[in-house]
Length: 438
Image 1 (cartoon, rainbow, N blue to C red):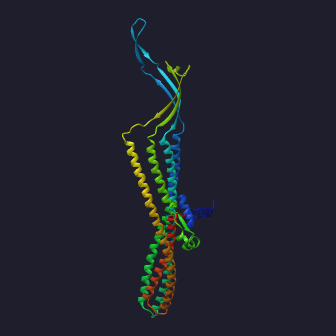
Image 2: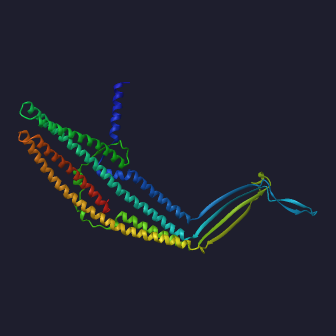
Image 3: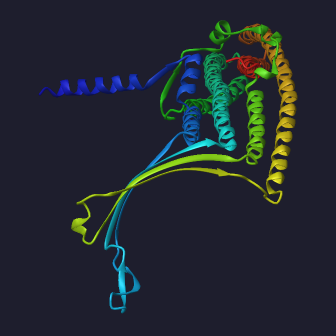
């Protein structure tokens, strides 16, 4: 076979595999993927399934219960009874048979039990808690994925800033070295540019490493292998232009719509059911059962299956009536009532905390907008100042020290502007969470 063809095929497989392993994601796609694939969300989904099974487990207690039984007994030594025979002589007479067998079926039905009725409601409340917890997990994942995605964008932008500025300084350094070689400049200017260049290369190296870590962190938050390749299709600008609503700061806040309040409210309901469950134990419980069985006694094992079998059947009702528990149950009820009072107090405290949180989130969002606009304008000014300073430097009207200071000012403006984009989108996401907006 042609070895060149084999090599081409292997390379094409490798390239195809690499392209398949590379994920291209917008921020929205990353959030959706994280919600469906992250470890926390998968655990939350399993908790809901578990709660549904718990509801049926509790429900089945009040439904008919059917049990079958089969028994075989070998009486190795029969019990005896001493009785006189026809000659009035006392003799030990075996009592029973060597082998006995039985088969039966029993049906039981719970007719009334107050704790069962309360338990059935409690299991549904447990399911509701699991659903609310899953919804809260969605909000947490949305925030975590957004922050991880933005962190990757931030490090990429900073790397680009340092790379572009290194290119510019290298160009200036080359020009200055030529000027000094022609005796028209000072070596100090060259040294100053080299110092700035080394500092920028250090920052570039640090941020290149941060970019690699931030990509691994994004993979981790998404629930993927941290070595997966991800291509971010969004930029800060596309996110802001496509999904930005500055009217969020004016949206009305209803604390009862917040997922944390709803979870707390369900917790109060659960504590109330615990009180009712203990109170219901004062009530009697009633159950019914029916049993039918067949039995056979035989002298030998070979006779156990032959012949006729005897029948037995019964129907019974049982009522359990609590009378006196030495006030133990009363003490338990008081404890559960105190837990209910505490749960209500915690809910009231949470309500005020959530109101404070949304006011803080609104304030942070409004400041982020103002800060973004100011830094955007400041960046334009810093760029114009740097352009004029570079022109003065090339004309010999300013020193490399002055140019370095102006450029450091530009770097700070560029990075602060990028960070303001991060902060703006991050604060928007946090405000959406406090307003319970998915």
